[in-house]
Length: 330
Length: 189
Image (cartoon, rainbow over all chains, first blue to last red; front, side, top):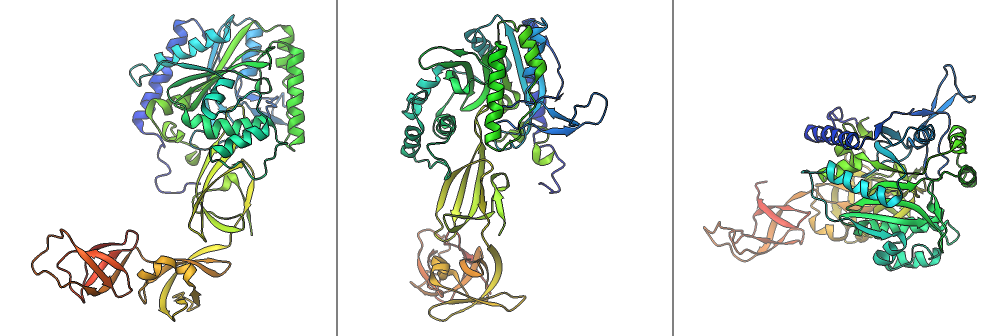
């Protein structure tokens, strides 16, 4: 907690806040030119994501229409209600909003941050990746040069930067890879830990620090599909991409899963994982599932961390340098 | 002793790691958007002075270390131990060579040092940033040469050897920076 005499002051410079306003305006202009509709969906929700590594803030609500437990959740992304709009026939939509993730604070994380999320009806992943690149070039024009984008499949990214196959390597191989690169895994981790946790260690400790320029990664392990479709290759991969700028994870996109049975199965599995880990089981978004049952149009969607984009635009060392008031001064 | 969760780790926090007391230098939160959160932590082992890097899953915890820094006055050396006193309480502590280490050469009687106690026992001693010490041995001074160019070694009353300008003589009082081991200026007591 900061109690210093300067703690009332913004953590960003006023010049940075002016640039922030300008880049937000450019985002809106980009989508206006492409006839993508700006929408606003509720920040408060009766349901919450069961994603095993996301923690939602819970807030008390006592008014009319309060859920039984008197508890609403702050959204971690506007994905569910935006999909309900898509199912209702909205067509292409985007949203710029604050989202909230409990426990996340660091040089690149603030527990509340601005997400730019958009959905393109009829787009496949390749088209959406191209649009992300256009958006970045358009928003960063005159602010910073962007090199040509480099594309990797998850598997090739691991082979190139860590010398291990990210899709097929097991825990012991990934542990050996970490050791070779001089990293000691957390003391309590064993080969029985989720292989995705081992992959995340290699990704964050070995690969991300080596990435420069604009990098798109595709074909994630099927176990990391989240809300993406799975492509039945051998081994199967998720129709998901991530965009990195200078090693900073900027955006995550999916070819959206529309199969309601599969979506329910994944939600329930995620809640089961939470239960095993001793973490709260979240109320599933039945309204999202009802919308999927009604029919989600074929679409792809992506969420981009606007504050991270500002970090890249300004060469900031820490995220609070692009926020009016970071969590320490909130 | 308290335990501390990764979200409570911050610079200066004293924790136990592999049975040794450590101080946290840096704590970085890393997390892929859809993945597991980790904390990459840099610590200094307070016994060896070595810097260690460790990764924790977020929400793991470490035991706190009973380590406190206290201002103490250096009294004297009895040939084996260096004796210190807390000015307010007159409580005395004897530090051994392992605790004093290389800093022995900067310890001047009556100077106020920072003593690190681990479970109540001296673990490390940090002298003041600047100390004033008399020259006990050096080549004769070159009169009028205040250019400071070149320089020569001088042995000080505590045994420390520092590079000094040519005009310095035996008996001169020098201000020395203990962090860099460099001569700063001549001093008047």
